[in-house]
Length: 91
Image 1 (cartoon, rainbow, N blue to C red):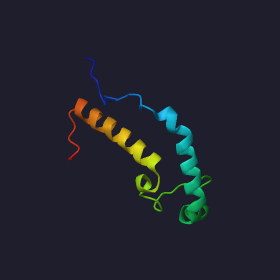
Image 2: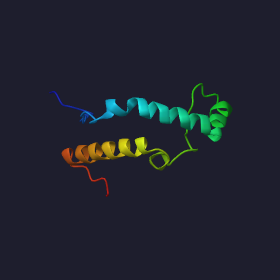
Image 3: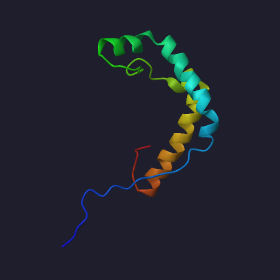
Image 4: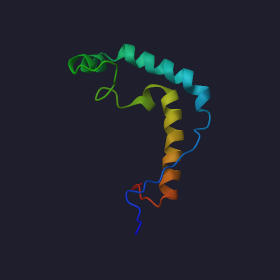
């Protein structure tokens, strides 16, 4: 007998225009890193060798329009993936 266990369905799609905003997104991330003292302090205190805004910045779409544009594109894909897999996202 053969049976499938732990089958995972994956949604895959191109994020339209992402290549066009990649440089702008990198610039916005660098700007936030420079300005986010709490994030840098968290990294230092927790021995994290990079940078994270974890627990210090939770409003990126309001801080820079490039994040708002990215969020809109990702939200569209999240909704499409949920619909294709008959998932109820509660919204």
